[in-house]
Length: 91
Image (tube, rainbow, N blue to C red; front, top):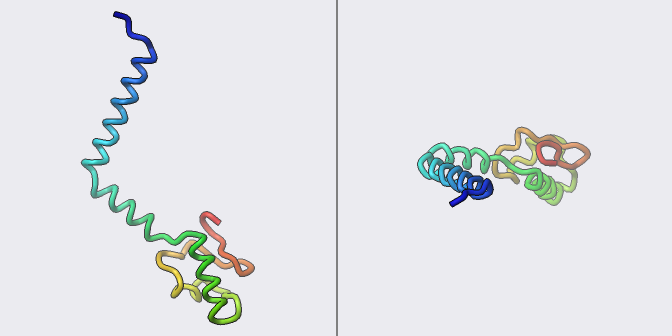
């Protein structure tokens, strides 16, 4: 019986994959807190949508990120408004 290198590589990949899934299954607290942290951040698109909501209600573009806070759920501290559009992570 001969074992080929591709068979050894496949067995190693499966072993590493199973180990990773097992670690994730046993470490749910850390994974859950990471997911909550990411979910609490607003996206560039949601900030742009909030800007549109502000314009629809006030008839003028907002000048500060604080003005659109009521239209956004999540943390928008990393964003700013440049020429009426969101600027920041992912924009």
